[in-house]
Image 1 (cartoon, rainbow over the protein chains, first blue to last red):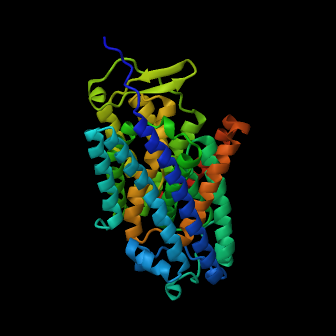
Image 2 (cartoon, each protein chain N blue to C red; image 1 turned 90 degrees about the vertical axis):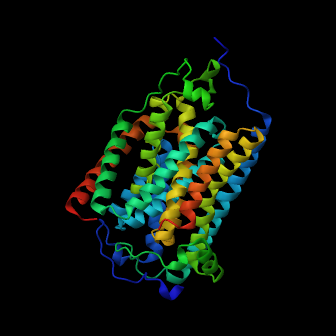
Image 3 (cartoon, chains in turn orange, purple; image 1 turned 90 degrees about the horizontal axis):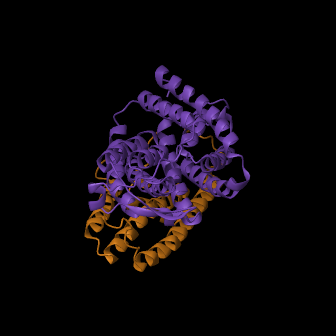
Length: 132
Length: 299
């Protein structure tokens, strides 16, 4: 029987983890701040209206694709600004996978670099909107 | 853009409260408060907020199920990222297991989100109700951590999935097994997550802990990592479909994030066993409602 204890984690991975924790914190706070600003703006303009979410109507084109969302947010539309916050939020887990890829690359772990790349590709597939 | 907004339509009050008579500001604040409670319950019971957020939106706030699913998934990403950033459990995550299984969960999530467009809401509501029933069952009978496997598995060894977990008796190596079965279940967890708008953390934890023999603490941390990535895949699809309504996503995600954070702080001072029973009853009532509505075609 060989010794079952696996090799200790290389220090490079720990540095990547520490950087990741900081990036995640900044990313989530940024998303929350953007959404809060957008929600405040939206309510200041439309807060007296009646909520109409019992009947479904898909969001406008300006609130769907990342480029359109950015353009609408620049025009100071409250809902588009919230949607920009949602985009930042969606990017957060993508960053986690990207950091994992970097960590595996530093360990020269080709298999897991490839698997991380596959996950990133699947996430990109959903985000660029070729499926809907 | 403000002109296009169709906020001022007559409401169809299906919830217990006549939200049609309430303005958007009050509605948003109520939704925020409810989401804080949902996020707190999710963190305290360890069962996630998604299972409470959808009944909150659909049954209490009278929101259409499609909006509810979109908003819930955004909240799932927020709580997953928030837990990773603030609770500092990241060190327990087995990144190799996470990445390998995410190939399955993200492909499943994309498939689930695409298929969701062709599945009737009655079916989605019924499936969600069944998930709630199962959640209530597991909160009455909490998952007991499985035994740590000692013998190596050839595939897990080749994939370098084995790791070391800290125990009261010092660091202990663990062996992962049944990788193909775990991978398959994770694909299903991805489909389920996207279809009904939950993180499906319980499925992920059970698949890792029971099936693959990943130690419980490592399973929950790795599951949390996977939940956010899985939801990001389906939210991408739902965004392009126009199913993410920002005016709902903001209060729900911000509330759930804040609630989860507070729940994490409260955890040491709360009787979790009692809370889980209360939670189970609430979830059970919601399950009956969702299944009834699904069967009656009232969604």
